View 1 (cartoon, rainbow, N blue to C red):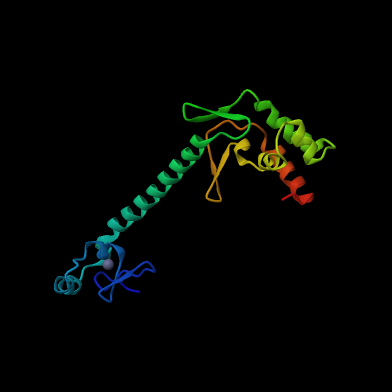
View 2: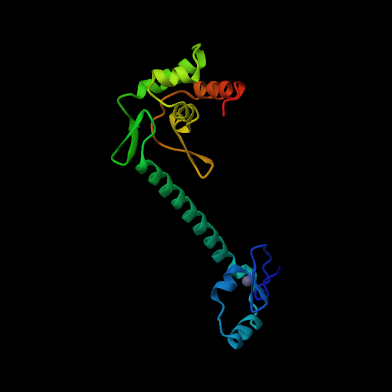
Length: 174
Ligand SMILES: [Zn+2]
């Protein structure tokens, strides 16, 4: 898959009028068939495009990072998890923030069922399970199945969170 104009080899090279081009040569290629033929016959050195290539890749990554940031913000704007509230578009501990640590501790050390614990904290069993698995409480955010560092305040320690994940797994709680 070698670009016919500059010789650059890449899996991302694509076809136009049945001719293989890299995405930079593709981007600048004319649509008219005759002009396109002249364009591909004029060879250039792939090295001379190196700086464009670098720049195009990094701008793509920048765009992706920007999108993730926006999506996380959007997620925050929609609603805050139990124990947090949204203030000036930021996630901050709510009045009941201490209850989060209590829930984690009680689940880990207490001899109570999920149902009893849910009733005690006026939650549904599913709501309780979601809390026990929520990465927000250790200062991270999950988006698109990936975990991202966030700059909001964690409500529990990583150790407590990990112990609870182990217990959930041991009890085979889905
Ligand atoms: Zn090329």
